[in-house]
Amino acid sequence: MIFPLFSSIFNREMNPVRNFYTLFSIGAKVRRLLISNGVNIKTYNVIMILATLLAWLGFFIIINNFDPYQGQLVVFTLFYFVLFLAVLGTFSLFGFWLRKLWNRKRGIARIMVGESFRQAIIFSLALVIALILQANRLLSWWNIVLLVVIATIVEFMILVFRHDESKQLDN
Image (cartoon, rainbow, N blue to C red; front, top):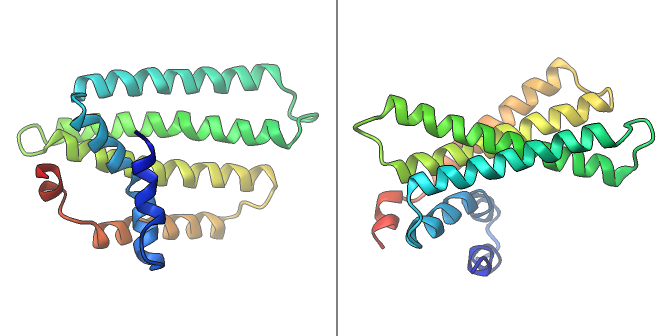
């Protein structure tokens, strides 16, 4: 069932901008897959909360069981990956709940879930990259500015090249 999500990435023409947007629209495809299979917003929130708590648990297990001075590349990779998942779930949930508070009457919950998940991916990735740079003593103010500019450009590219989601939800 997951394979059709990734087949749309590899079967497209070799347009890098289009492929870039398709790569970052996986969150919207996962959301549509969950919603179309009968998962409502309440169930989605419960699944996200459980997955986020599991990721935070894994993060704290890694912190408590591994020594960073003797850790190998696998430990650091696992550390940053689990941290990415934990922060992604946290940002996604908080983003959705804030959108739901601000747009009580106007917003469609399915679209708000997609937007919050997409922006959570961008923010989490920027945060993990900044932490990796800091661990290697390469983080400086211009790197932070560059990360913010790249994150902003990615968000604007997605907004410019996205399709009308209300039409896609009807199909």
